[in-house]
Amino acid sequence: MKKLREFATKILNKPLYFWALVAFVYIVARVATWGYPFDSDHWIFYYVGKIWAQGGTMYVSAWDHKPPLIFVFNGLMYLMFGGNLVLHRIWLTLLSIVDIGLFYVLLKRVMPEILKRVQDDVVNLSVKVGLLLYVFWRNLSQFTSSGNNTENYGLIFFLGMLLSYMSFRKDQKWWKMLISGACFSVLFFLKGNFLLLGLPIGIILLVDNWKSIRKFFGYGIIFATPLILQAGFWAYYFGSKGALNDFFIASFLFSAKYAKSAWAGDVSNNIILLITLAIFLLPMLLLLYISLRKSRENLKNPTFWLIKLSVFAGLLATLGVGSFYPYYFQVAMPVFVITMTYGLFNMGDLNKYFRYFVYLAFGASLVLSLGISMKQLYNSLGGSVRAEAREYQEIADYVKANTAPTDKVFAYDYGATFYRLAGRDSGSRFVSASVLLLENRDNFGYGFDQKFIDDMNRSQAKYVVVYRDKDNLYYQNTPIVDYFNSNYELDKTFTKFEVLKRRGE
Image 1 (cartoon, helix red, strand yellow):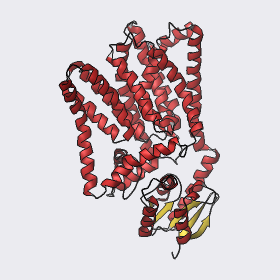
Image 2: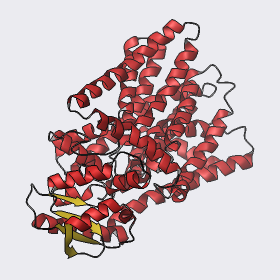
Image 3: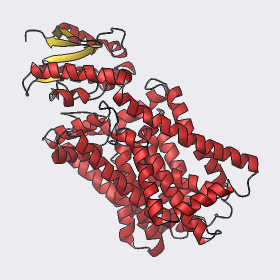
């Protein structure tokens, strides 16, 4: 172990070798994201963003349950690159390099402040190890998904929020607090539960200024001003389009009911997701425990507590959703990795058997997590996912060949991939059938089924794609199924799906 440590230190202390290793780890970790299956949430965000960029009204012309900024970013991506997935993934790769650079800056600020009792060369080593761990964990496909979601964008603004606030604490320049608040406002309008990520700053701000409530409220107002201004802008924007209620439901209210359904086990197979997450969370929580053992000596260290409170805020924001998709955890990856790194460099006083157990758990987590990530690459290249993708393309080609560009269609399936493949728009604002099923089955009370039927009647969608298996989950939504049976007839059968054509067409 000692010789291995000495060899690793020698490699990391040579800049050329170190940056070559960073690039190698990035490529190994990122390759499954680059090769992620075409069918993914990527196209939901892209589709809603595209319709908005083309002049449609968000949540009225196209709907998904997220605040508006993820669709704004995707609308801009549409304007820059169209629907070219290769260009999308190059762009998303560049964004990942931006947040890696920001994390490196954060590491160089944080580690010297929380590793005060060690030599400078050890601090420098911890920064390099932390960067390698971040590059690895941040780019695994179970955390990135396809690279296009709120968490991937949120990383840049979470890091910007932390860096700006830490800089503010040093010189008390108000505009730095304003920048931190601006990053926080972007986080909130990417995903509502990201609101919790700003809580640690509020706590530390209160501790710093508990003797001067006036000062606390003054800085708090500066921090909150961008959020208030952005909320006012969106309220005005959607209000002017008569879609204020649609905005509130899609951005916040639906997600609250979604979380309730997720905790009831109605959204995903939580056992499988929990096992996947446990492979990552077990070593992270072990190292969090090790780092918290140093709490007493760091009692007056605000940087230490900013990171630790951010870890708990990140866990609360992600676990609180109730559906434990690993990519939910990505936005908090910076503070998770800092905690891991700090723990790894503070195990000297541990029982040697416990220390070996932590090393073993951490090493196993690295290997198993990489294996889980590579499964998505396999899914792109072979197996049932590949076969289904081929069939989806065949169906899309058939529908495209038998429709005009202005014709509307609907795929009664999860996601919006079909609309990209067929080059045709959805006949309803609800591009994904899962939203309709969940709202109907769990009685959310928003009347989505009737809105869907009204949309389809207005658009006169020419084709509908449905599963052949009538025991499929989506057939539980009987109002939608009854509508299809009354207004559509079988046109063409494929292996897993069948295409229905509107009667009288």
